[in-house]
Length: 239
Image (cartoon, rainbow, N blue to C red; front, side):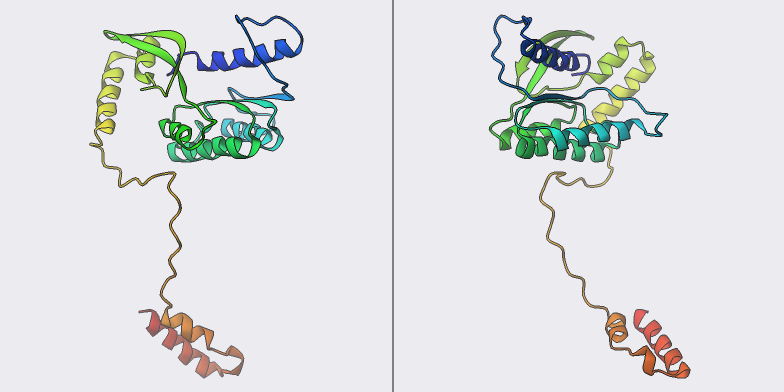
């Protein structure tokens, strides 16, 4: 969930690995760390005004460097990839990047996301597992336990965190109403198919008579008058 501590947890893992490879003690009761050839991170991003790159462009550039450079001995930290664009674009990119890391790079990966649809990857890949940072609701308040638990999170608690930040109560109530509508599918934004389903086979369109007539046409053998007649004939075929 938001404010659960997942980004801090990921940074902690990177620091522990770095300390271990320096020969230093690590903050753990026990640690078993294999050889790591590189630590790649995609955590936090801001726009690059000097280079004219947006926040999302910076994010994708960093992700591209990771996908091209990470090996099976690399530690990869990916924090909320795809959040800088539309929901479906971001979700599709996050899914494809996660799957590439699983199938191609095959390194040690921590991948945090608010896209619950990505938790399905654990069902398809034995080497993938879902964990979450625990939180409990107490009345109208929320308590973050900062404990790592197995399985995907049940919700993001984004509205509760917004309330903690001081967002006006009227806005919070409106957001909760909107959330209930979305969860109950009361807002009809059109049918939404399975985002990760296999693409359907392309269907060949029926040949159009105007195209057939155009293919058999030899423009070099036509007089200006005949060309004009053929043009009117093609127009009739399209009506």
